[in-house]
Image 1 (cartoon, rainbow, N blue to C red):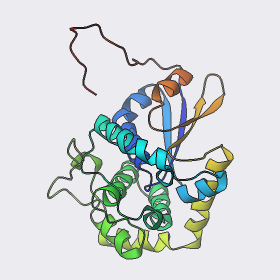
Image 2: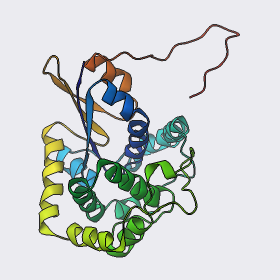
Image 3: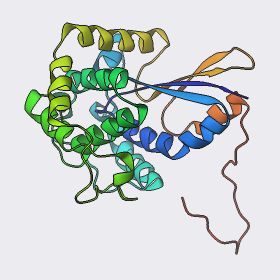
Length: 248
């Protein structure tokens, strides 16, 4: 057993929000199996352009199906009060926030990095204040709280400790506008494209025992990932009539 999951996500992707919640719930178990998870901020718009893909909500049939599938997926991870923040083409210009995430990843503890992802996703999908300009990014950073300060349904606790000091907020804002982190974001997005990405969440999974790596796409492929890594897992099972219904 053992291995690595490189996870490429963008705050403009609803299923990236879902997959982050899944990782937060399973990260301790994955560590027990010697599996490392590394989350890479990438620009979904550039991945769509580079792969020739189109956002699913721009295609009528996919958009109609997505209205059902997204709600099922959100319920499965316990998220509520989640909806698109208006014009997704405009809100999807997430370069500034993604550069900020790269800076936090390089300069703060992993717990802070994960909490920043959580805060940005909450700002985007629940508060409908996408952190795509300096003012909105500042507000998201100032409002960021630890991961364990959210309730089961994704509601932030009142009076929770702030994640960043005023000086740290300024530091992150400055870094997000720098050429250094423009290059870092471009490199991570290019890496995802080289690994076959055509959307997000994109997973590049390496089995340490075999040395093999394979791609996986979406938030509902974990049984395939666990199988590839040789991890013990319990799959979905149909029960006989009269059996107690399991909860998601």
